[in-house]
Length: 206
Image (cartoon, rainbow, N blue to C red):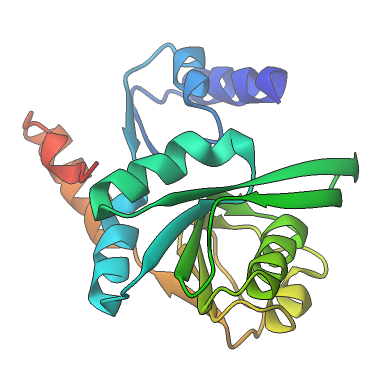
């Protein structure tokens, strides 16, 4: 992935790009691959207000894997609620072999936080296991809606109440549980501030 990301960065520079505005890169280190200024926005700017609007009691934030614990912990701290982790092992790429929950979800409203959902195997397995462990409701929020292959069917048939994405990637398949939040205003305001040489720090909630 690092070689591919560096190639894309070089291609953009060669095409004449002199500044990049992006959101929730899969790895923060990718910013360093660019030879031009990078403004890295976060989907939390639209996802957190949505979660707060739900007024969920007994809220718990969960990470579908240990790798995403930092992101999930940021949400948990901001919302003032506990953090739960899922420890998974993979049989092969995109295939989860085993998964265990680290933390208490019984009687809780759980929100799983991730950066992107591809085939939805991990996130739906996590949701089903949490339901078996006594979770009251389970939702998922992710920045980027890849949703390839069987993802929509898996989400529809899972224990998830809903799965919330930004509209950074268009989603045309039909799945009643998928909700997309617009990041247009966030990007528009960032572009305006960049053009006017103003600080973009107000765009960061956490």
